[in-house]
Image (tube, rainbow, N blue to C red; front, side, top):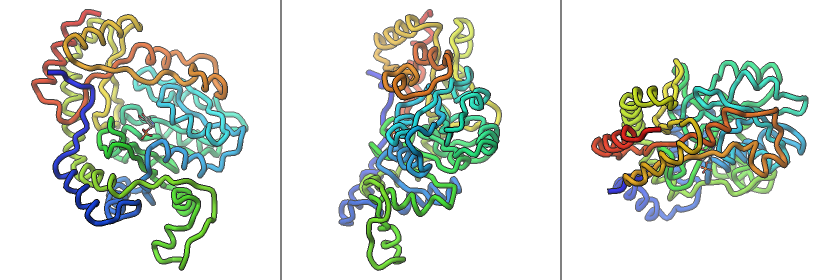
Amino acid sequence: MKIPFNRPDITVDDRNLLANAIESGHSSGNGQFTQWVEAYIGETTTAARTLLTSSCTHALEMSALLCSLKPGDEVIVPSFTFVSTASAFALFGARPVFVDSRRDTLNIDASLIEAAITPKTRAICVVHYGGVACEMERILEIAKVHNLVVIEDNAHGLFAKYNDRYLGSFGSLATQSFHETKNLTCGEGGALLINDVALVERAEILREKGTNRSRFLRGQVDKYTWVDVGSSWVMSDLLAAILWGQVQRATDINARRVGIWNGYDTALRDWADTHGVLRPHVPKGCEHVGHVFHLRFRDRDQRTRFITHMKEREISCVFHYQPLHLSPVGQRFGGFLGQCPVSEHAGECLVRLPMYNTLSESDLARVIDAVHSFTP
Ligand SMILES: Cc1ncc(COP(=O)(O)O)c(C=O)c1O
């Protein structure tokens, strides 16, 4: 039997919740399920306001608008990330400035950020890669000195922690993803966590096509009208119903994934050390949620041979993130300070092992055996 890389776990209970949402007759946004999920995430992470969105990309686009970026403004982002971390800002005319990652965590290297700041820099958007926290004290300190907005692209790390504090609670804004590859999913979806209260009202307006509909729904105005720019970034309550099932199981889902992650880490330690293969590193104070387990080989050829070796054993392993400073658009619009050797190495040599909460113990053992039988 084939072991896929990812398997979304939409349970019978989640499907029943979806059926309830359909029967309720409220299938657009802002329904009961949306409110429940927003309240749950907000109360847990302490965000001043949580808004469910149609994707993490859209939550990042809302963040760009909330920073009131003008063409020519610059936003510091890691090169080793998904396209949306940079494209959301480029969409509004800002220039993404790419910074390399730390070799151990693959998070943005905080020691390189200050050199990338210019008079045009407005924001830093960090990514907690695999839900392992960036060095937030240091990054917040730099942002304070240079008066920059901090946005956390927390697509991988909902309910992960740094020094006992939830990721997504450090920046003025944070974004989440509920894409089918994430720990909690409704197919496609996201959330914007707003920690800076001053941004809450505008965020509600942007998500509602530039109208003050949220105030109208709360009975604060007797009709709603066009008050700002914006777009249609609300999540359907049908998807929020599935998500409501998922967030209520979040503790179990994440614990199971962390168990699998630890299983890989313990079983592969000696093999990796013997062959000079890098495993993920989790610094002190970081509590992750088992989103990604990756290996880094010496070069692209080793990685290609590894993926083929696993495929021959019907195990799907994937790579991701081509460094953005090397992408065609990154090269055209992006700022870039010299080389990003860590990002380039990860782009060529990193591979992710199967990771989903329903991965059985026997399949976990099968993946581990298959890795052990590979000689880099
Ligand atoms: C770091 C990061 N940011 C943003 C996104 C985009 O998420 P979405 O598909 O919900 O727009 C992803 C997707 O995988 C991601 O990995």
